Image (tube, one colour):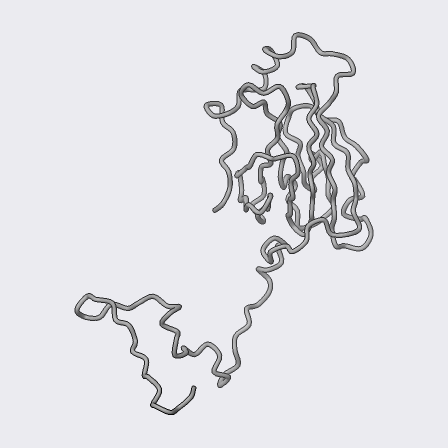
Length: 225
């Protein structure tokens, strides 16, 4: 499983409340917010999956929930989604002066892919400046622009008619599990071990304990292969 351990209190971050006490004496009206620019794409014709997506959303520092449930802050109308499928979570890195973000998988139904890392239930990974996310057929690109405020951030949403992530691996579409594996037809000879198959298979020990390498017959003199 390839994923990065989420920030911990003992690691490279501090509780957001503690950071607020140290860095902010009082709320400043009009303080610049951190901006998350989120582009969304789904292959379904039209914009039905994104009918409930607002142009923008200002949010406090609690986890921003993404899913199809009524309590999700970003609601996506897809039956394969969980009510709470994933969350975007803000935190303050140790010694940091701006909000940082991580993405956490909340669904048992399937995995979430973030920058080529596979996240299963309750796993999370810190986000960088530009992030590619795929889940349940949805492609999402998240761009983070740092701001001054530590009390809130704002999301701007863009619906893309074209794919955002090219050359997806099959498992990142969540459709590979339903594709039957192809087997060679009987008598085709495919799958049979060839003369060099021992190069691609583990060596089998013989009764004496030493590995046994299959012998290859040398061609006769004057015979071209």
